[in-house]
Length: 249
Image (cartoon, rainbow, N blue to C red; front, side):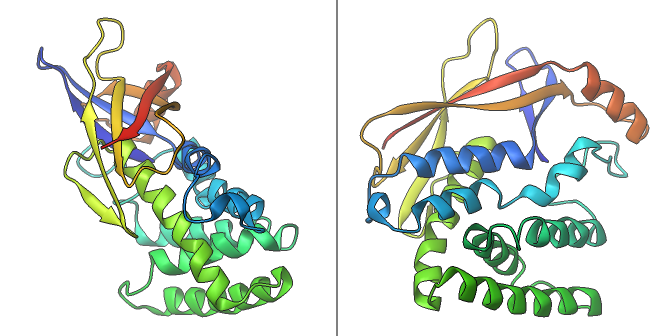
C-alpha cells in the first residue's frame, strides 16, 4: 500500500491510499505510451509491459487486508514488517513464473534489484539466492541475454519511479535512469480537493500531454485502534480517481 498524508487548506487531515497493484497498473499504462529509446520497436515490448504490470503482484493479498502500525496509522510499502515483505515477494516471483517466463523474468529482476544491499539474514539470503537461480532459469527460457535483460529492466525502473513519484506527489525533482521527474499540484476543485496533479518529465517520452487515472481511497488521518478498525474505515471509503496529467517540463 502507498500511504500519503494529505492536508487541506482548512486543516483537515486525511490519508490517500493506493494499492501496489493499482500503482503497477499505472506504471504499465505509462510505459505502453512510451515513444523514445527504441521501446516501440523492442521485440520484447509486450512481455515487458506484462512484467511491469505485475511487478508488485505479491502485494495484492496484503493490500486487501492492510495492517496498522503501532502508532495507529496504516502500514505502507516502506514500513511493512520485514518478514511480511519477504512473504510478499516470494509470492510475486512465483505466481506465474512457469506460465509466463518472458514477463516474469522482469518481476524477479525487480525483486532482486529492490532488495540488493538490504541487511542480511538467513531467510533473506536464501530467498535472494533462489531468486537469482530463478531469474537465470527464466532468462534462458525467454531467450534473453543478460545485456538485453538489463537494458529492458531500465524501462521498468523508470515506469516504477514515475508512478511512485506521482502517487507520493514528490515535488522535489529526481533523476532516474536519465529521466527527470517531479509533481506539481493542480488547482483544487470544490468536489475533490487535491485529486488532480501534474507529473513533469524531462526528456518527454510521449507524443503529447496525457492524463491518467489511478484509483485511490481517502480516509481520515487518525489513530486506528486495530486492523479491524482500519478495515471498517476502508470498507466504507469510496473509491476515487487521482487525475495525473503527464506533461513536458
